[in-house]
Length: 124
Image (cartoon, rainbow, N blue to C red):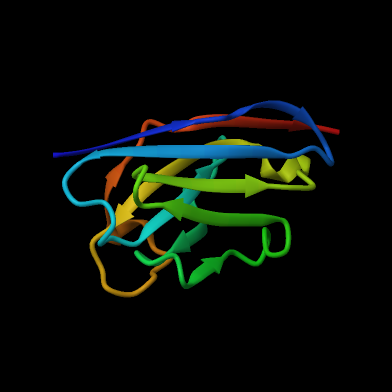
């Protein structure tokens, strides 16, 4: 069984920064691609970023490129999302998830374990 617990969300002003953390427990963490998704009210869950098991490669949604950085510490079984220059459009519940595929994918259906989410609210 795998458990993912996110933290670090909050209410900030546009232009501020936040760091989200996702701590994993259970089965081997280091061998899996990890991703971050977000879901705003009334919208579908969307891909934000993902990182390979080694941390050597990452992928980002166009809307966050240059502002967000995903990283991981396999020894701590933790994946991070550094969010800079936040915008009101970034307001959403952010989820971390584990992928069961060997390549980075952006579709939620290939992520089999999900955290409970952490709320990020950005005001103008």
